[in-house]
Length: 352
Image 1 (cartoon, helix red, strand yellow):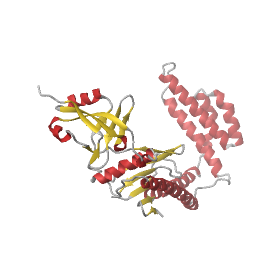
Image 2: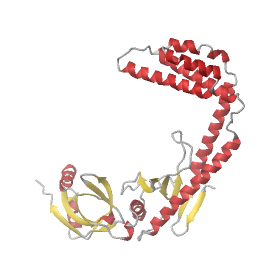
Image 3: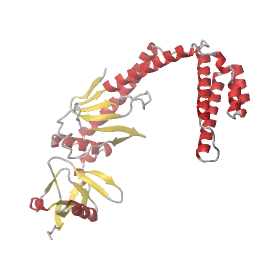
Image 4: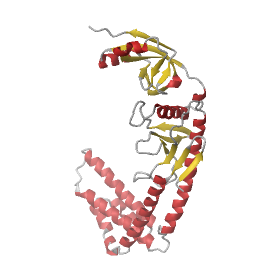
């Protein structure tokens, strides 16, 4: 149930293993906490609530005494929870006022606030658990919720895989060196249990597999955590890098792979020792950085030393944007070499 092949032609698969394992662990932890809480509250000391009104007066919360009296008399869990929240709110406000220097509330009062709030929450939970209407979270609930969420996540991941397959189908120079895996992300302590709707898109299935994250905002695909071109720890083959960045661009701008981009005029600082390699050349290597500001290229040249400044015209289909603001910067992506329309040496480095 954890691995689904969605397309033979593009070799896109869905992997739910990390999500499903972490989901089962989280749901069983909820069940265990529920059992533990029932055991703890089964011995709740009813004498502990006798002094709640006195505690409120001691803490200067006389305005909550009548509220507390009514909630305790009615044994109303909802009213008791509201009382606990009101005490917590007063504690927070007093702490903020104290830190602002307006009053000097004793620090140990905050412990008393917390202790009283916890007592009232526990009493509310005790009433619910002993009322006969409390529904404990059982193993049956774990299994039912697990199946519901895994099925929903499976559907969500298969839709993403379908979008990935469609995008790959529009990329004319797709190499397909590695399978593409749509991996539903594991649930950690910072996530709510729910249907997974974002994914890690991985090329291959090992610890160093190139990947990016995929999620949707208002029905539009959003791509994040994109790697930097030229990282040979992840991109062990230029064809893998080409597929990776072509897929990122196609997902961000559907249809961009089936048509040429815009011809852009950009600048780059290249080592003086490589000058002859670029003279009258119609291609440049992948991974180099370009900018639309001559001054930036010139500054890079000064910082790195012995650099020529080149101006070139290049189709944007060979670029991925790395900075989008008043200045725009790009990185060249593709095979080992990509074509340029024109390339001119406009500021050769001269040794002093």
